[in-house]
Length: 472
Image 1 (cartoon, rainbow, N blue to C red):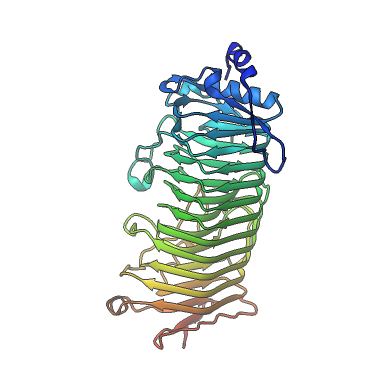
Image 2 (cartoon, rainbow, N blue to C red; image 1 turned 90 degrees about the horizontal axis):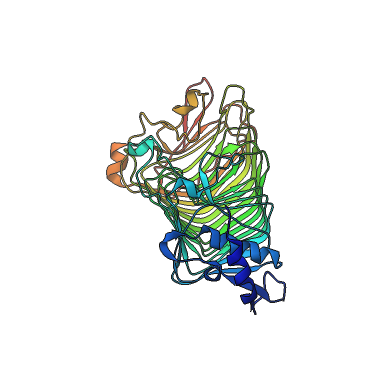
């Protein structure tokens, strides 16, 4: 986008010093008010040239803060530069333009959608303030909702590629029409006290997508999204590693906490703790499709409430699956995964399944409280399938239909310790089920344990091509 050089020249002498310096610099920062670069702020004028001019001036001065004062600003494609923080003051709203002509075409972008805020290779950048960004993803879209055709214009709100030292805090984003915050191959990212409220029935309206990024810290955020809330990907083969998420509220008609499906690289050293998952189809999902490795991942002190979408799509509190996306895809690995201190409310079940050629390895479920809040038939169910694929096998239905509240298949080592499953009498009478089912063929050092609080809870272990054996 082009900006008016006369605006920039007139505004530059009005640069102010901000007495609270940037990230640990101990120095003052320059401040640039976008109104002084010609922004109108009436919600009608195209204020993209003004905000871009302010960013360029801030960058040229060595970095600082671009201030967005109270007002309504319609903007299109905006490029971040090194050293620039965008501060949205109380009452300030940046509106994503509905006009396709206000956006650059992005030939090297990872998707066909347009981008509102973009940065490539920048450092020390971010957003702050009490203001908000508003998209226009308010129409129903998605096969689950009966509208499979996407709208003609969709916009990713924030796309940072290969950026370092990113700080996003305190802002609110509404109705993104595509992924809200996409962090591709970024390093050292802090996202704190960010609210994202997207339209629930708008597919691809993810919340935060760390993609091949490392050293990411997300805390005290409230994400209510139209697709996955926090979803880690590896689209380029770069690993997702050293990611810590704490004290967040997540709500999704898809998967609240998700790893995959794009899994061309590895996922390691990832921790989620003290989070509340509400009204979500899948609470925690691990989807390995492309040959990577998921390892050293822990979920602790999390509450999960499944959404009442049982008549629409697969609903599960926890799901993990290894599969091949295509017949010639590499086979991935899931190992060293722990779920601890979880409280679950659902009508469904937990399913963790590997493949005959790639078994889950060292999966632990400890101190799990699971309340069944209503009846739901397991017959005829199909496992959750997200992302494109062309390869299928019998595991699409084989284990998700087993009459058990926890099913583990193709796993070298599994520990289930102190799991309490509470089932109403009427549900138990209508659908008698086991607490735990294990398909233990080819398992090594198998340790499937259940500390049940109700005497009638049973475990079923089956060996491949053999009759099931019932044990207490």
